[in-house]
Image (cartoon, rainbow, N blue to C red):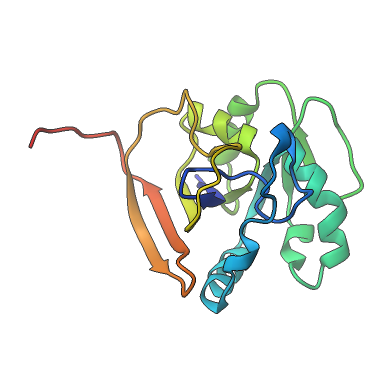
Length: 198
């Protein structure tokens, strides 16, 4: 059984919307697109490259696919693996595309992804895809979060955790802080939430 890892750029107040550029996702009149750019350094770049170079198959939502499909085939020198790997796209409105190999998932996406996880193959990596991530969280399908937490608050925008997230415990498996204050933290699923009293 393979794992499903969610990789996100995250503000301190939990926003994941439009990290890479001003026009990436302006939904809700979001005005801070590109908020991760001023915080890059060699530590962050090395961590991102390490994750990009791992064996994986891609699982993304339709909006992320619409951003990535025209971009990555033109930048194969940066990340050839993303063009070569199988891309699973949650969409009820698109069934084919020239960016191959791509498989479009429609209908009961959570059930289909649960079956994908049981198959042999590399781990599934989810980037961005806020709506899809909510579905994954609501159906308890996330095995790990690989987060880059930035020292800013954005006040509004699409957030990683929303209503309906199933309570779950995680354990930190890796963490570091970059020279510009970005916390790189990986968390793996660790059972149920435990409570107690002081």
